[in-house]
Each structure stands twice: as C-alpha cells, then as structure tokens.
Image 1 (cartoon, rainbow, N blue to C red):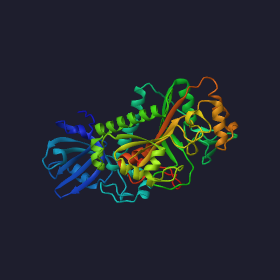
Image 2 (cartoon, one colour):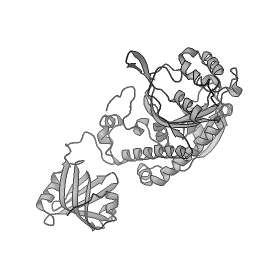
Image 3 (cartoon, rainbow, N blue to C red):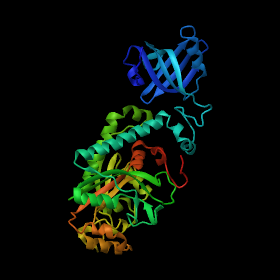
Length: 426
C-alpha cells in the first residue's frame, strides 16, 4: 500500500493510516510506553508506542533515536485526550532518515537559555527552534506583503547591482573588492539606480542586500542587511510618506491575519499603527534638543513614549544633515531645509527618504557644497540630462523593521546569518 506524506497540521483532520516526516523534538520513556514528539514546519504530534502493542523493532527504535534526528513515521491516527491536539499516532513503521549526533551543540528546546553569540555560531541548529522559525516566518510575510502592495500599485520590481564603481551616498565606509583589473565596492544602497529606473519607468521597488563598512557594534546595526526600497516619479516627500503609511499598515495587517500562531509564540500583540506627521523644527522644540543634529536613540525612545504605536514621520530636515541628493526646499541651493524625512516606529528609526534632486546643475552645486567632486558622479548626473521628472523615495531596513515589530533585543535575531564587525561565518 502506498502512502502520501501529510504535514502534521493536516494530520489532525484525517482518519486511519497516515505518514509523517519530521524531527524528533522530544522523547519520553516510561518503560512499557514510549513517546516521541515529532515536529515539522507546520506543527507537532505525539507518537505513542506501547510494549506488546507495536512491533519490538519499532518499540526499541523509539528508545534509541536521538533528539533532532529526522525520521519518517507510518501508523494509525487515534483520538487521545492526553495527547497534545487530541490526536496521536500509533506507529507501525519508523524509518531513521538522518540520525543526529548527541549531545547537541546548543540547547534547541523551547526554553533555551543559550547565549546569542553561541546560538549564531551554530545557526543551522538554532533554526530548529520554534521561536526562531516564528521570527523568520513573520519576516517572510513582511517581504511578501511589501512586494504584493507595490506590485498591485503598478511598481516595477528592479534588481540593482551589488558591485559598484564609487560610493552611492558620498560616504567613505565601503567594502572594497577587486573587480578584474579595477577597484570596486559592495553597494551601500540601491539609491542611484532606483532613481534612474523611476525616471524612465515611473515606479520602482526592490528588496536587495546592501553593505556598510562602519565599525559599529550595536544591537540595531548590521554590516550586511536587506533593504525594501521604492522610488516614484512625479511625487514629493508627502506623497511617498503616504505610500509608506499605507504599506506599513498593510504589512502589519497581513502579519496579524497570517501569523497569529507565531505572534502568540513570541508573545507579541500587534495592532495597526496610528500615524503622525511632525516637522523637524517642531520635533526639536518638542524634545528640547539642539537644532541641526540628528535624533539620538534616546530621542527616538522619547518620541515613542509621546506617540506610542504610531508611525512618526519627521519631515523637512535641515539640508546639512541629509545626503547630497535630497532636494533643498524650493530647489534653492542656499535653502536651510530639505525635502527629506525619517520615519520612526516603536522607538526606532525604520526609514529615511525624501524628494531627490533631478536637476543636473543643482545636483552639481549640492555635491560641491557637501565637499564631493561632481566628476566622481558623472554617469549619475548625466542620467538626469535627458528628461528626468521630479521624484521621491525611501528605504526600510528589513531586519530593523522586524526587530521593531517583534520587540527583539538584538537585530541579529532578525537576520538568519548576520554579518557584523566580528562575524563572517556561518
């Protein structure tokens, strides 16, 4: 007789003979009765073997298999008031697909207290834990919802290059690479490329890795991360802030709809965020801080206390704080204020963006004002010489956004295989 594999979550709807595959989550031996808790990506089920009621071979195997081994179980599904979920499988056959070495390198139990650095050393095992899987199931929903939202609105998904010839944002903290006989860099942003696409195809979006070589070591920074970016032609900072407002609300609603089990497991209660728009000038006065400086992490936390569960758009920042490509107010090179903004959520900056400079002459002036040489950005400047509309955009860091949403202590928890100043493996 042939069997079809059934995911554990679907087993509870069936009757009679079933076949399941998964990992040995736990084992209990009560002498004449043995239990295996089997786990796959969809859930868990109890395998129950009573001595004399199942074959001696299967009964003995239930005692010898190690935790986290991969097995296939065939058997009969029975109702059981004592079993988790009210069902259990009485095994007729157990096949060991891969026997796990013992002891395990880290604790992968539900209440694991293994420190983060060691867990990351053995991330392949850490990913066996239900709570870790829950984080990345939710992160998958985030990227899917982001993509769905903007594709439905007519955005083109683009794939920017990861190797570039010069700095995207004028910074110097880049990772250099040898590119045949030339020097090149890992891209710190898709910024310049998404602008080029928006200036021809109007609406561009991407989810792409970026690299920054800053030698920081904080709970909110990585040296390699994923960015969710958009760029829109014929739009100013207000229009793209409105798009972010709607997109974030959509993403959160999709998580609430599709990830209830994962949110419960992580102890997270999400609700659709409120939104507030506040100019930089008013923000400085509200916080009673020095004008002309960036917001500190402490400032961001204070704003969250004042506006909880709110996406706070701090807009119209001073020109000197923003990158060279952000449009000054009125298109005036001498303007003190810009068309740039930051978005804060749950006490942390999740995004920055604004209207870009689409006028070549103004762009050259702003580059010089920032101490940069326009010759180093010739191909970028030239792209605006042949019919470039005004345009705006923003970027949300995927791992930072996940950290904020789920209240994670460290951004590394939201990255499957984090890269920071000290970590290059696994």
